[in-house]
Length: 303
Ligand SMILES: [Zn+2]
Image 1 (cartoon, protein in one colour):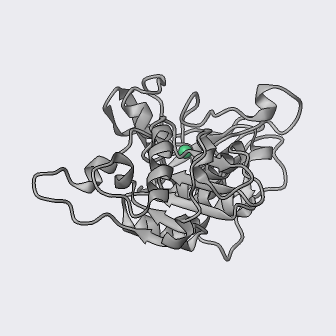
Image 2 (cartoon, protein in one colour):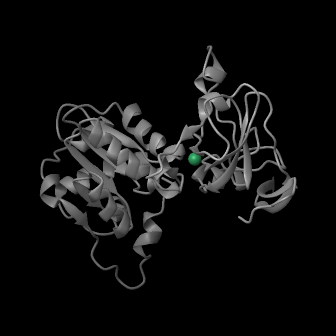
């Protein structure tokens, strides 16, 4: 965005009502005690923002949305120490108070939810002492922006799935969050990681980031033959669960490399390894729906 130099106004993406939002000129924020104002240099459009504009997650009309900022400190409020104006910082989507107990200590989601968010030239950061992370000079904004929310969301998928050493894991959708769930599963010791997506570029990235197998979801819908019986068993049982809104699902197959067991219905999957690499569906016949269409999921698009 263009800086509003010499002005107390700024441009921001303002939510007005369901499916009505856009860039408006509004008052620029200033830092109160314990707060900071960051001049945003890079941010994201999160799947959560899409939920907001579609009315699937209600916020107040007039709110600036966005919650994943990278930027430069523009103002520091009273009591915030150890930072300097002009310092490059990353701000996490969840902003704990940094002390005490309860909701504020845990860090609720505020930016772009109950407070004006990051899709703006400037964003006010609550509890700034605990929520500004200086960025090393050798790292670019693009290299760190995933750490504001996306990486931790993906990692937490692996954590909440309870992945343990030797497990087999299926990660549905290999968008930014899904890729981070794939990395998370690998870091937690999974011996077999299967990334599912309908986009070859995403599957190629999944293989680079730790997946053993990249699999098209088309197989799950039964429109085309599965490459192996093991794939069929895996995908039929797994894909039912992938249609839960809210991002990628990570499943754990306890004790044996059988991803299907993650859903409580044991099935042999020992041949899945032989299909390592991207498994593409064969060409779709005329008159049938295209594979990207049938692969689409109502889950959060960012996943
Ligand atoms: Zn987000």
